[in-house]
Image (cartoon, rainbow, N blue to C red; front, side, top):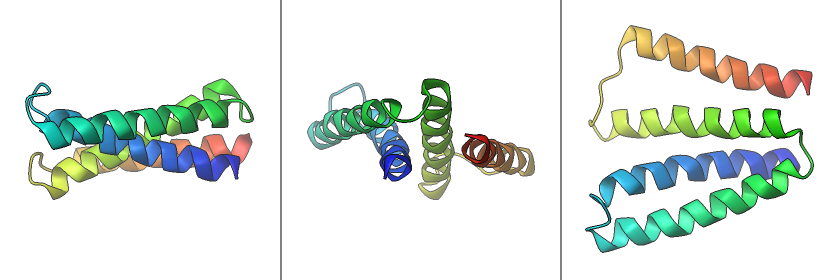
Length: 104
């Protein structure tokens, strides 16, 4: 259960990062609301997970999931391009997150 909460919290990190960009400096209402709600939920989930999973591992997994999904969302929305190097580095990041889980 702890890992599921952490994974969902990492996914919410990608939501709030994307919403923050879409809010255009908090000038757009609904992306700003989505940012606040998803940020709060993400932080609460991270705090819960950190009470049961070692802090360094929990934070690294949370950031890794959020970073990878944020890039993938930007690629999907055609805001960024996926290159071979970016894809390889994202795959390395995913492998690192899985490795941290495996050794914890």
